Length: 251
Ligand code: SAH
Image (tube, rainbow, N blue to C red; front, side, top):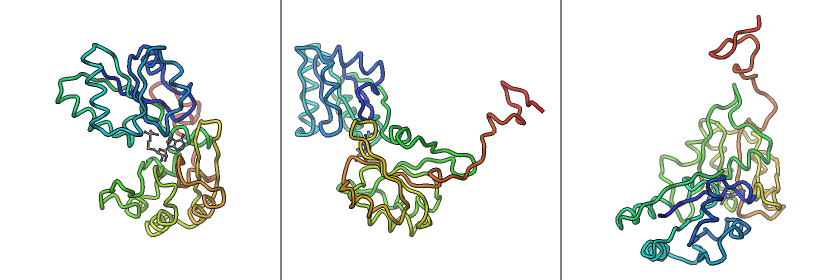
């Protein structure tokens, strides 16, 4: 059996209880090198075989899984954050299906949730935005043209931009073309939930300068939108004047 496990955003105690249990039981662990906190590997059994996938191809990863299956071993494939976000798990799952090998996915806390915690922010504020757009700038992995950031920016919803900390000038340009204002609040969260976590506040206009000043080019999320501002409406759910299924209005 292969388990694709979300390691969480960094802090080792932010893996799920299920993920932690599987790590302790695994005969083989293949972890995504650059972003998984190595402290998690200390949970592994003494005789657990541990591989860093950073230097491996997809085929090599699958080969290790196939070998483990042959021996009746259990494998944990440990991905950063939640495996469903830029995790490249689909291609692994499809090859495993072809081989007739069973697998399951254990979710994790994505870094965009870790970043919200670092910011002590709520992405979905009434009257501000009820939508979170998770996206990235095109890098070596292309982004479909219809998802060009300036098109997404036209909604001026809350935006969490992954994998783009080194591309802040073109990101700013596209955010502005799309309709965010220069003064729209923005933040850079570096290594959310790690001991080295750092949070920088600015605006869409100042994003590239902030990153340059503090020397951030990777392992950061860019958050954009008025959810970082001061104005919002109170929620209806906890409004004394509002009745819902579980509570009568007070007046
Ligand atoms: N599956 C992961 C994302 C992997 S893509 C998740 O759910 O979070 C890698 C990108 O995620 C990085 O380039 C960075 O933009 C972001 N990232 C991952 N961990 C992060 C962290 N602790 N703090 C800020 N950004 C992080």
